[in-house]
Length: 611
Image (cartoon, rainbow, N blue to C red; front, side):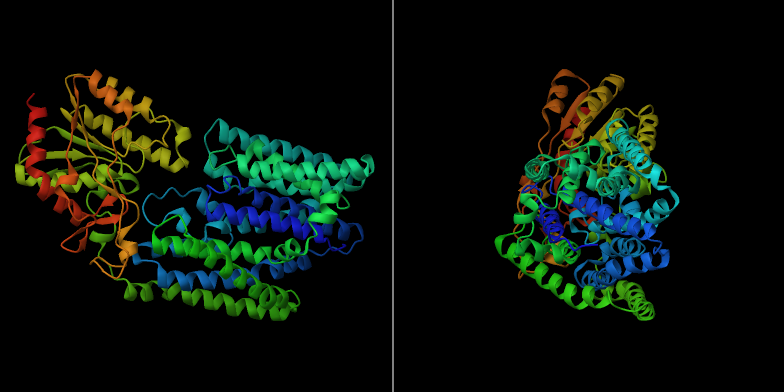
């Protein structure tokens, strides 16, 4: 197959779109379409090679799979070694299990399936996960397992029609799941939803000659220009909120298909063959692997999403140096290895990876031996979210049940520690059940959930809360009232109307939150004055629909505490960290806050109870 410099240029555009998107999604909200361009290119090239060899009776399954291994795995293995080594040094011990789990699934090319089921609220953010982008490699390897079998079994005369049928059916399946069932996260990482993108490359390759003969050179040049414009438009207009892949993937994928087959067009011959683009395209696989890990580690270490100018320049330079080095000394070297040497090298890399995996936790624990009470939620988790085993009873538990119920999201989890301390001091108790992200009140729409598991968990915890409400006189609720949950306003209105009017609903004002995780910034629980412990403090105000319901309903109350008046040295108290991340007080912080607000809180609670 003739080497195509213009395809290298197209690869360069794809990886640059992804790079800019990963640098800051605000710069290019739909830059993720670069991944889809890669999938179409892979489908076009790899299927073309397989069909050519099948036609000339030279295709061999083992040779094909060995070829894919030589192309993808050597650099990938070194990447995995780099990430687990760096992660052991950079990650805090509370996040190591997450890192190791991501490494495991990435190493067996199953990270797409793992990520599709993840909705973990606590721990490292997705933007700080150095393995996040490996889902594309997992999908590619899974597809390569199936593609040669499909092309070998299906007869040539049926191949185009069957492939077109599969593209249509799987695209509609993807659209239906995203638009009607709300399974966006599952579909985004799904092989089934991505197969059409590879197959679009296949059908363009099959009909390349026929389509080229149909159009004049001027028309083909015009189509290539329009195609590139459509790719760029989709990279600007699309966003993480788009119903993607679904039907929306057709625009960049079909545009890529036309750019692949009209190789003699003006754009391909003059623009995509530019030396700089060809060079970037040549090392695009390495760029794709290295860039995200570098960004993720910097974000994790700084606990900030945004990069400053110096960090951006550093990322660009380091990505280029690592990519060029890995291309010259790994990609180029390994593609010429014999099967025997490839096997030996693979065994060595595999053993080294296993050793690093095994000893990563012990080494990390020696570097960062941080108490759980400081670095993660520990109080009240048996009545919370995925760790739920049953409702819990806190405060002065030796006296009769005060018929108080605490529900809500992770901020209500923090309030368990606060109210437990106040309750013990002021002699009241409460029952509680809480959830992550989604407060456990009825009516939140399935489309607002990232995964089926989080929705199922929400339904279970909401049912537990509703049963407890029947036996409670006072329902205390604490929440972030996230504006990303579009159905929450209607759900809370429904909740207020559903609760009998003789029961009182008490909404708690929120405690201060930070702009970054102090544990990561400080790298320890005791204040380090050499670190940049300068934080922006914010207290979430109640959304309009809550204040409206407060005015309209006599049984809905606001218990407001002026935290800014009582917490002076956020996020520290006596130089000890009070937060386990940017948005949540740790158990130590809860006890400190309780001691400061107990009198004011109890006075206001009594006023509401006895009104």
